[in-house]
Length: 305
Ligand SMILES: [Zn+2]
Image (cartoon, rainbow, N blue to C red; front, side, top):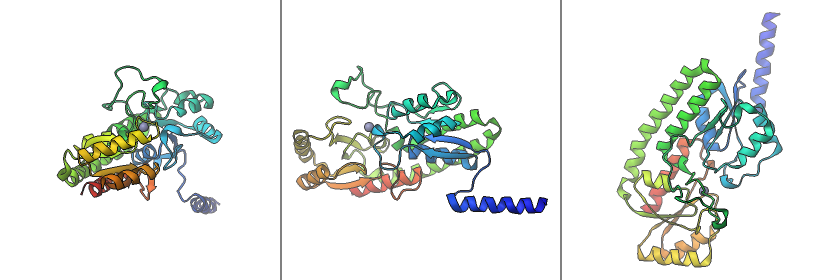
């Protein structure tokens, strides 16, 4: 009977695997992440102890996510919520409140803001009002495109997971160490690839790349948007074209969620090379955070070459 029971349960597990494609983990820590990048890094640290769901899908503008009622239900059952913070995922606060799950509220054991300890860039000296239309009110929140910052993200997640499941702390620590080693190893390779283009100017669509540009000693020449979140205007684009010609800017690198019309126009007018980078893990075939950064390095190299 015992034998039969074991066979039966393996059959059940096998059919669950067939349905979901992922082996179910008994009592896995349920994590809701704001974005696919945070979901992937959480999986790297949590391993088979976590099941992770990302609210934002690849190629959705993270500033403008429209949450679904099912997202509230997921947060109600979540052990841990992992967010970008800096108001990029402002939409998450309403979800957490609606879920009634006290553990994942700000200050609760299941709350992780991955911007903790990050050196924030473009923090406004005076408070930004809605009138200017600028959506980076607490500084630039796209810090996750700098691979060095992924170590802080991973550390914040490690601490959150250890709070929820102290018995697994050493397993999480091991995964964290491996993740950091991998980033360090790849940093050397990425730096070498971009080294020949030191201080070269780059234009992007939104100000998503500033942490990445700074890390790899590239110059942020300007954006196609006049201000973060404000669609390009004809006058802004024509003055950008004029300045790009004056300074011989050769690269326009555009995040995969933005329209092609203006980048194509700018590329035609200035002769600059126009390339597209993946906005999210899952964009342009990327499968992990490391994959995403690897493709960014490749695409920037292609644009600057
Ligand atoms: Zn932004």
